[in-house]
Image (cartoon, rainbow over all chains, first blue to last red; front, side, top):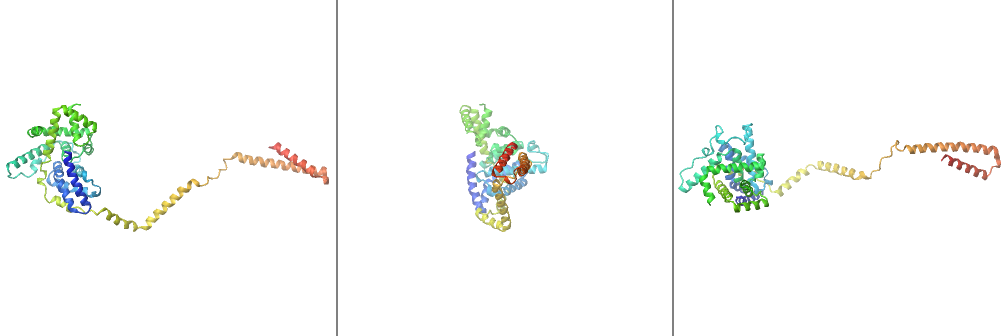
Length: 202
Length: 181
């Protein structure tokens, strides 16, 4: 898990150095490289696509303000932290009394589940269709997690953010962060029972 | 070590936060616990599948380009160093003023240990003042005695006074001083 992130980060570090030398097109490659995990995290933690795009842009804008000090090898993890802070600020601005420690998103009034907010897949070949079905099921399962568990899970799996850092961001102990991850995994195991059995056998 | 602890250790191991001892304990437990091995395999499979999810299907294709295009071109570090220099040089008076203050401060701090101690307060050496007063008294007494002796000598010896008389008076004075002291 860590090795995959390591390779991506090494590549991003090289591109970030090029950007610091004045080649703006190198930044485009870094943004593209981290687009999927970062946007995925933001999309899962915000109110909708437009909201997510705003946070995505603002995350990069803030990150690039400190381009000199950015450590390319830990860039994704750092971007997740910036995004987390932006999302918390937005939640506080909109609903001052609510926090991330609220009920699962499906019960939030006036908010459609993530799967419904994404465009419906078009006609595809059988293999791709199966892949899209798994995508949808994973999205739905993650969407059903309580926000604080969802955030720990995505930060850890997509952002490679260490538990110590997640705990600091969520202002809880590392044991609480680990417990949230374990709860999230337990629910995902139940929701993705068939797939999980196949992964274990592999 | 129970399975719950082991599963936390598996998570910490994957985030590279597990100590060397923790890794050793984890390896030992995994070697004899098929459930925890299955847990780790399931976690790896789930993480891999989640990383394949196309979250960004709804992503505005032009957004990444706009982020990059909106970013300022960072100036190379060396160039920025050169750009900053004239800002400082544009205010030489400020720089010289600051330098003068620093030098003056350094001068004062360096010379401070060599400064003479302040004169003793007049109240401190009471004994010295007392000594001065004592000497004055003694001199006054001697003066009286000398004048008295001088008068005695003039009356008794007249013009026949000689050096022997002077010596005797001197001895008398010394004896008197000795008595006073």
